[in-house]
Image (cartoon, rainbow, N blue to C red; front, side):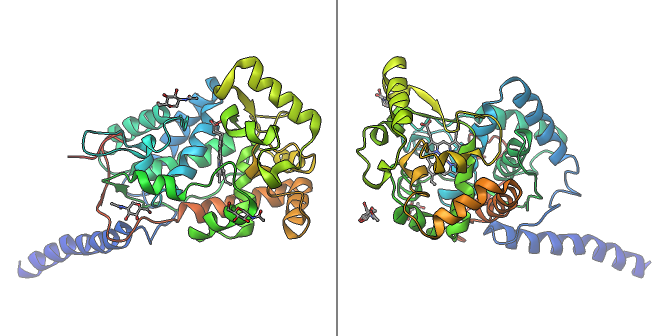
Length: 329
Ligand code: HEM
Ligand SMILES: *[C@@H]1O[C@H](CO)[C@@H](O)[C@H](O)[C@H]1NC(C)=O
Ligand SMILES: *[C@@H]1O[C@H](CO)[C@@H](O)[C@H](O)[C@H]1NC(C)=O
Ligand SMILES: CC(=O)N[C@H]1CO[C@H](CO)[C@@H](O)[C@@H]1O
């Protein structure tokens, strides 16, 4: 009798101790691992993939949108889903950082999250949803797939000044880009590989106009016919919101065409072309990726895992949000 009570109490204690240990590790974001939800929400990855596949089938532009969300989320205070928070009367959200940021994909994340809440309430963080959804976004467009370490937690605040401070500018030169990535522990190769995300999706004229007129300094390495065509895009569609694809040939295929565009001096943003054209090791890496799609795919996947490890400050309060747009209470 006594022994059964003892074993009962220890079997009750053991998981508690384990889960506390896990919480301690994951609360500050330092301990992510593949299969984190294997017990607590075994279908989590299938649910994410199901929603992404059906969305991308009808609205392929959602894939680049979601991928970009992950980049912004991780670069602003660590991958903590702060990018998903709506502004409230007490808090200006990351979304407000640049009113014309044009981030999209929030509805897709909401749909994934609501299905996850039905399957396993309160278990899967919004930050992990973004990480998984962006992996699926890439593979659904024909890019690589990889195992995503999980166990992120969601922020309870957004930090609008961090958004301004940590995101690289489309007008940045190579030095500035390297610095911004280094701040997050990402090296030059990570930076060149991750920039290959710009093989899909679009940008608006307000972000590429200066380059087309030669106002961005070292970004002037440009194919004149390309510059002329993009100036016309800005004109024809009318102003700041005129959208152009990063990679004209295959804007919705996740391949290595981005690097061939750079070599052809047809990078859309100043920050894109900054990777190629000045000689040296960066030119070599761009050439390598332009020829070796598998090497690019491998390095991109590795760098995405690294970017996904950027953790929020260890003293930041966290939770698993129930609705990705709001903190729990
Ligand atoms: C190297 C520094 C980077 C800069 C300066 C930059 C800047 C930008 C800008 C200005 C846009 C266009 C926004 C608009 O006009 O609507 C854009 C789009 C995009 N960015 Fe980046 N980005 C960078 C790196 C990254 C990284 C690392 C990723 C992901 C791994 C990424 C993924 C995307 C995607 C997929 C789009 C297209 C979004 C869509 O079509 O909805 N970017 N980026
Ligand atoms: C917000 O981000 C800025 C810039 O990184 C930082 O200095 C500040 O401490 C952050 N504030 C909060 C409340 O996290
Ligand atoms: C890059 O930009 C920074 C800041 O605008 C500037 O100080 C630096 O000289 C530039 N570097 C190059 C190589 O143009
Ligand atoms: C060009 C453009 O879209 N500008 C808009 C940016 O956002 C501000 C504030 O929301 C608008 O007033 C601008 O018209």
